[in-house]
Image 1 (cartoon, rainbow, N blue to C red):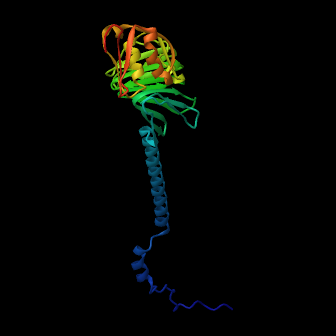
Image 2 (cartoon, rainbow, N blue to C red; image 1 turned 45 degrees about the vertical axis):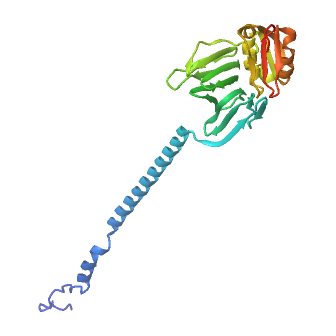
Length: 285
């Protein structure tokens, strides 16, 4: 038989947790699960942002380096008076220097640049993705798969294209002029003339030859002077106006000088200092 309910029993109430005050006090110092998740997401976003900024900075640095096109290697090339030399680059490009020439080859990030400080060079450029340019004073000659010649005498620059084409910029302000094989261009004080046909024998030096075709003796003497240190002097205008034709070896300049009286009405006098005077035959030296 069930017992009657005890009317004196009171409902049980939960007793207060004595640790609750400490729990509440410590809660601000320990983040919740939600706060931890939010912090993790924010940290991931910051990391992604840092990586993005780093990648952008790297890209900008690479782009700046590419645009700056710095020289990674510099080589000085030079010849003495009467000397000719040739150099071959790793890609097959060939650089020839004529007598008394100085050039600086800059191997740059995006290409090669030859700064011609004085004298004359002929360049045979091998095909490749890297550009090749010759700089002579203010003038810039960009190769377009060619064989070309550049001669510099102070502010005067002469460009000749044997094969292919080049783009010539006489100075930084002027537009580029395109020259094709068989054309030449004279630049005087950074101002270009009109392209003309390449003169016969203009680049014969690269084969060790001096080719003359009715050339005034004054020009012949100027050309020969490039290959000898002691001066050659023309004593009068009549002799200077005489014309000479033929093909001669550059190494035989002295023999050519000695042979002049046999082909022209001139006298040639050599002096102890190896200087030479040339005059009309009737004139006493």
